Length: 417
Image 1 (cartoon, helix red, strand yellow):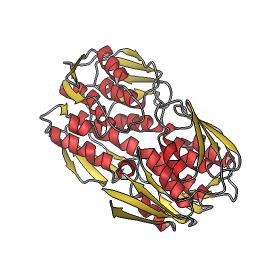
Image 2 (cartoon, helix red, strand yellow):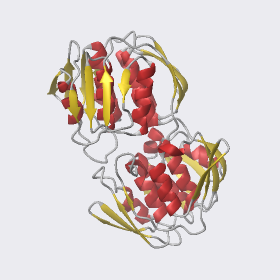
Image 3 (cartoon, helix red, strand yellow):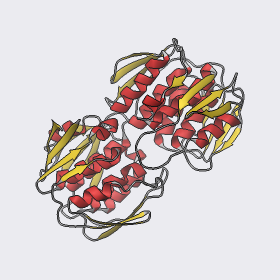
């Protein structure tokens, strides 16, 4: 296992590309199960989660050429419809194979998911959706077993907005007979990305990006080439890094229209953020202002940016209240930030942050993907040296973040624990 050592206090300056979005790439890999010829995905990030879903698909008989950058996927040789516990437990997005397997291959046996320990995140809405489409669904020995000769369109209402649930049922409905209507569907840009990918393949999907998605099923899909969108959470993380170091950074492959809630809060905190040429310029302020934040489903402030903006608020002038409404266990980074001197008090779903002039380096431990990013950010701005253990969490969702930050002037190294 590796740990990351950060020498704080260096200003970030320069330009850096934003990698392809993990949360867009994973469902596209799963959607490749819907066609028996070569799909070509470009701008695939080099991440642990990508390697995990590739390993899962290969175990099913899918052929995959490449690991990142340009990757080709061909599901013609599928011989197994099982997603085993040993893989699914490490990444809950593995459950995305459920819908495509049932729709295309008539059956699926998928372990109940794992992933980051930030809440229960049950998949009951996925299962209710598949049952509404006509699948027979059973839970046996920790596995979901689903079967259907051919799914049939239905009207499905999600009790809560669920990104992976919307994606799973949208993929299943693409090959169902008749029309499916998804109500209270998730509207995240990654859902739109998947809909665009499926439509390129010949699916008939309308309304992605709104809370009502209409899918008219087709008999078959065709292979396509597709460039994966930039990662809006990585972009937001890099913006916060510039803000915390009084930096001057240009982000390439950054779509501000997908980040309006984040950009609005960062500007309110004093960051300058504006388009410049082929990228987005971010300039950190001399004095960070305290802002209140409440996480909400898109287009609200994303829960995946909550830990990062909390790190920013640790250095703000004044008092900030951060309210987490999406996941019940997403304040685990607070105790680690306190080790660095942060003044944070948790009351239920609220974290009250009193900003300080500086943080101090300390040994800390990453507890999940976004928590690990927040500790890196805190380390960049802290006095002295910060050691972050369990950084395998970071590598699940950020492509070479330490290398990117070093190119901007940070002092970061990795060592074996």
